[in-house]
Length: 139
Image (cartoon, rainbow, N blue to C red):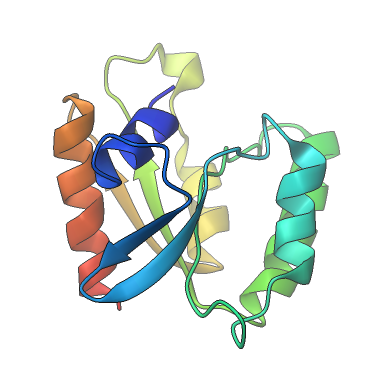
């Protein structure tokens, strides 16, 4: 929870599949790897910057168990050879300790690109504004 609401707020309250930020069109993939493994991995395998230079996708950092971590890391390694990766992580303080992202998991993402952890517990619109600023800072 949180990823979909943030992306919906970022797209003006709609489920738009594309959004415009500073004149640049971003395709949006809302279904993350914890909801649609195959579709997520297909996107990482078959998207290329010549057709879509930027992509916003929701990702659940499933780095805790080998059966999920190893395929995700392999896919991110291949994807990072074609794209610069930037991770905007919703790290909520109100989550139980066992559900919070550990530094080891953050380090995996940092090995692929820039990571920013949004730790404030706020409504989706505030998260979306912070995410937009993150995108604009890295375009």
